[in-house]
Length: 410
Ligand code: XIL
Image (tube, rainbow, N blue to C red; front, side, top):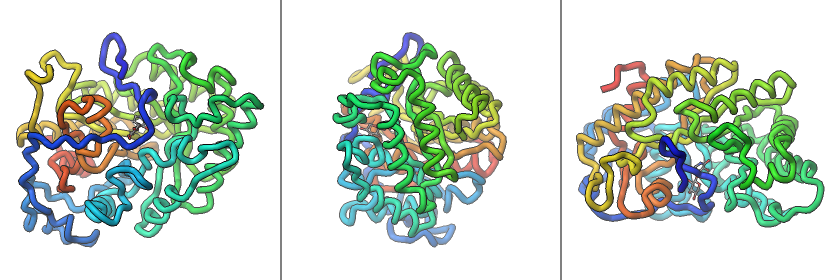
């Protein structure tokens, strides 16, 4: 974990590629919740089922989160051999599938479409896990946001690529072409994070820790975007990064890059704000300005990896083990509901309808969140997502729904 000098930063680039999501057992006020209607019903559950037959302590009445959105409403999912897999037959797999089917129109594979997963050796592509997820999506009328074709992060770059000594432009172009090309005909993968996290906080290109920059300079971005467009002209192509929502040098640099691309005819369709934010930072009004600043380019804007932990480890009042939130109380869940609502409202206010690329929450149920290991070092639980550990929808889900339905946040 690294953070900048002024405000908290989650530096995803240094994190491992395997599923994390620690499963701390203590102190969860949700543990008494028994199965909700979601667990037993299918996507055709009647509108009253969640509230009437649910034994969950949460009063959440929303039936389909995505119903009133004119853009993709997504969730990051695990698959393949990962913990918390959407496709597992045992455990809570069916509950996860019911939740996804009911509430989301789009999914992002949290890990299984990253570089080292899909392209582990120079001449080896392993598409089976991703293909299984694509099949699930196709079976249920969902689309996928591919994540991510190029990412400097050490654990995500396959070893052979780090040591590559040939023609980097040709190699990277082939990597992108083969992966995008594989999924192009299926009409399920409708968008891609082409390059993830190319900029440092000061707006310069990330260099010291990027083999791509070291071997190709900034041209690697252009090479990747051009190859992606050629391989699937129909897919929306995104540049994706964290710490954009608070505005400043990094967001300015991303926008300048995008504008330069557009001026030179390099294909790009959108800017992705990861959205790993805090319960109290950045202010929703600041986020709205940042979304609007990105939207002023004319490109699509997407909130790609939204999560909102209850504990803010950077706040002055947080100290473990003396002073932190060990339980998700109703009051905290309600605060999180309001925050989710305000953030989604900021997105709707900041981005004109035609440019809304979508909103994706980074994980299904709370204990699966990467933040538990990566932000809190497995010291304690947190509850950053829209579903509790039993896959009951939380007030946070109602908060997103309220915003999508144009209601005031409460
Ligand atoms: C995270 C996954 O959620 C974890 O399971 C994995 O260990 C590390 O990567 N920014 C990104 C995502 O673009 O790919 C990261 O996903 C979270 C931060």
